[in-house]
Length: 138
Image (cartoon, rainbow, N blue to C red; front, side, top):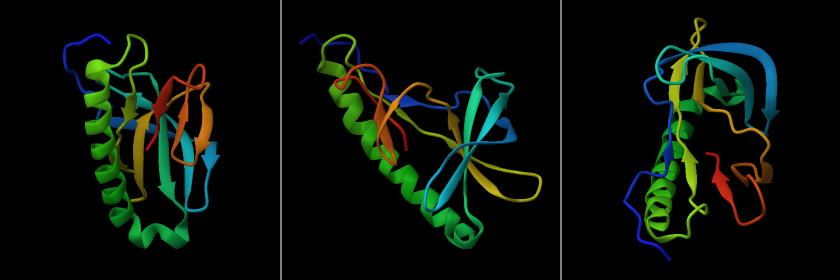
């Protein structure tokens, strides 16, 4: 194992603070719908975004759920950052951590960079590449 320079395992929206939310569904779970989007401005300008919103019957608790998502992502980033410091080259773990955006109609979305071509493991995680290469979605 190689000792590498410490860096964060967080995969964030960088300096992009606006998004255009589309109508095409990227996925759907029991509580949320994920729509395609495009980052506007900043480092991710023009890149694809995943825009997750709660279904109408769950929106009243959206901020509570989003806060829980952020706490889980922060802990996962902490653990992954420690792993990445000593893991073999090419086996680093990156954790998506989005930000909250509100649509013009006031619906809140958790917006994060899209991960394409991943194999789903559970509703919140998956991997890219063979089964030993993980990239976690939260």
